[in-house]
Structures are given as C-alpha cells and as structure tokens.
Length: 410
Ligand code: SF4
Ligand code: SF4
Image (cartoon, rainbow, N blue to C red):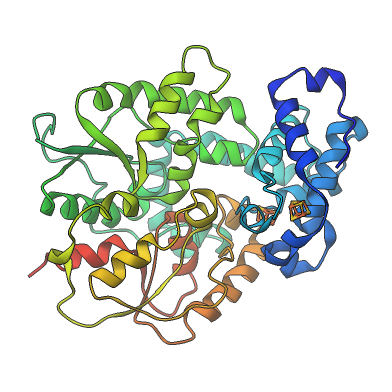
C-alpha cells in the first residue's frame, strides 16, 4: 500500500515501523474473516483492513475523530489477523504506534471512557494499591455493577503465592511473576505451578521488586509507562538471571507476550536494549518450559473431560500452539473438540471493562463452543480469559496447571 507519512514522523523509529507495516498490507481483506469484532458487527471499520485505513489516514495527518478512536478502541489486540494474513503484516506494531500517538495527542473520547482508562492505568500497575482494593472489591462483589463484578474472582482461601524460603541455593530454580491481577485474583494458579515445579526438582522464586509487566498500559496506548515498568522489571530480574535462575516462567500468557516483547519495546534504549533482549529470550510460557520434562508423575488417576481455551496471547501473540494440548494429552486428560478455537473470548486485557457489550457477545459465542460437549471443566492459560469465562460458564474454569497439581494430592 502506498503511504504519505509526514517527513517528521518518518524521521522517528515509530514512523519507520508504521511505514513498514502499512507498505506490507495489500488490502486483500483475508484478515477480516478471522477478526472477532468484524464477525460480530460486520462493519468494515471493526475489521483489520478498515482499521489499517483509519490508522493510515490518522498518521498521514488527517486527524482523529471519535469514530477513529471508537473503532480502534474496539480492537482486541488479539492478533488473529496476523496469524491469518498471507502478507505477514505485523498489525499490532502499527496499532501500538497509533494508539501511543493518539494518547499523546489527547484522543477524542467521551469523558467516562477517558476516566475509566486513566483509572485502569493508574491503579492496576501499583500492586500496593491495587491488591488491597481488589480484595475489598471481592468482598463487595454482590453490590458491584456487572461489568466490574465479572472481573472480580470470588475471594480465595489462599493468600498470594510467595516462595517458602530464599531459593538461591536450590540446584535448579526459575523465576515466576506475581503480576498485577493473577496473584491476587486466583492465587491457586501460582501455588499449583510451584508444587508442580517442586515435584520436578525445581524451586520457584520471585524477584521482589518485579511488578506489572506493562501489558495493560501498552494496550491503553501508554508506551512510556510500559517502558518504565519494563526497565523496573529488568533491574529486578537481572541479578536472578545472572546468578542461576534458568528461565522466567510465565503463568499468564498476557504477561508472557508482553515480556517476550521487551526487546522490541526497549530497542531504542541505549542502556536497556541488550538486557531487554536477554530477558525476552529467557522468557517462556509455563507450557513451553514444562514440555521439556517427563510428566508421567502427573498422570490422572480418574478420567476427566475438559475443554481447552487457547488464549490469543498464547496462540497468536506468542505463536505457541499445540503445546498445552500435548501436555494435557500426555497426562491423560480427555480434551473435547472445540470449534472456533482461534477466536478471542472477549476478555482482551481491559476490554471486558471498557467494551462490555462486545466482550459479552464474544464470550457467549465462545462458551457455546466450549460447553457444547458438556466438559467437566474449562481450562485456559491466561488470567483475563479465566475470569471472563468463569463469570458466565456453567462449570469450573481454571488454569490448566491445576490439573497437573491435582495429581500430586492424596
Ligand atoms: S492485513 Fe494482511 S490480510 Fe489484512 S488486508 Fe492487509 S495484507 Fe490483506
Ligand atoms: S487484533 Fe484481533 S480484533 Fe484487532 S483487528 Fe486484528 S483480529 Fe481484529
């Protein structure tokens, strides 16, 4: 596609990234066929091809209206279009550049939307503030409006996971990330992960000063905030990775895709670029890490039928496909067939809060497929999907690692 980006923009690395993406798109529209928001509304501007036009017009200097932001805000960043595109268009790169500029220039949005986005960006990455508020919210759930109640898991009997002892002397150890939502909403996931790792002879640990991975601010167009969080995490993880922690293991695929992108996020930073690329290389989804081990100790003692929901951040964002499925098969879990496994469930970062109608429509479609063969449980690999699906599913929803941890009980 021909472009007419202003010289001033082309002189920047973000302008060059945008130009490269725009030029690689041939506007064929194949991607619309797998775009969840396009399938839902049928509106050209709710599909990737239309959004690419909107972003091109904006970056070329035509300005942005509320129509521009409405259709770009509705994008789930699920990256299904990237998996489908025959021309290899790196759509999310263009979206990130555009959202960042829109935010910097004061994107036209109604006041309630601006306030909601500000509150999410301000609260969620600050664990000291967010975790007590989240816990309070869990206890006040029945009084909450539905769009907030759905993001709050019922209070857990467990406290957020912490390493039992300093693990620096363990023969093999890995780093986990407490994260902003998973650690407080469903601590069961990290407790189960640590038990499974321990059974394999590995110690799990945390870098105390590591915090939010930055995915949420980046999704909301706040690139500088995401970069600052990335630098803080790199500083926290660096000594651990230099002193024997063999990997940074992600239990939430939404965080995993973000940290694997640290190299690109900080590529222009003369101080952090090299360390960011190293940290990204050391980052693995939990399934990628566990597939290296003999998992026969986790074979199920009783049959169990589950439906597997692969998060977009795992299958499209990280390109990890078939790995969790292989692990579930290896431990004797029966997976029911699920149609449209490539489509987003609607959670998509903050989408469930900011775009509730779209999020619920996509969830209804997703659950119809997941529950069609009446599985006993639904399993997934990202906290956002887990909470969003659990709010409307007719059966338990959990991270898949809990199935392996169960084999260690009794
Ligand atoms: S992003 Fe890819 S599939 Fe979509 S219109 Fe452009 S070239 Fe075609
Ligand atoms: S990222 Fe997902 S929602 Fe956004 S345009 Fe691509 S397929 Fe559609």
